[in-house]
Image (cartoon, rainbow, N blue to C red; front, side, top):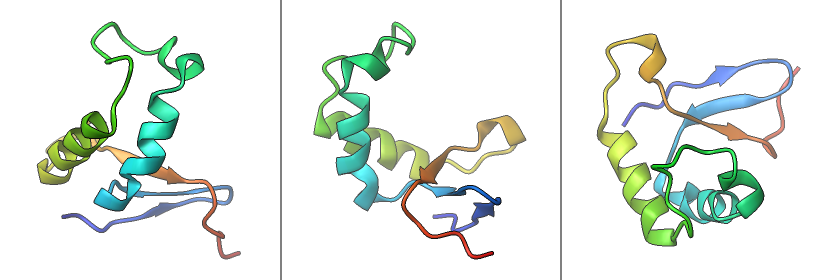
Length: 80
């Protein structure tokens, strides 16, 4: 698994981890969020969907910049 982190002034991004599944499930199962997703995005979004998606991106090694998949860490303090 990649462990690279992109850090800016306002947030930090890092690859998804298995421990992110509960938070991903909570957000992705919200109809206010899924309303803006593609037709392929499942709703209701189950915890199993979150686990499977995170497992699939954890195995993926991107070859192009547009293939990177990161989690935004909203509550991590960002050092200044």
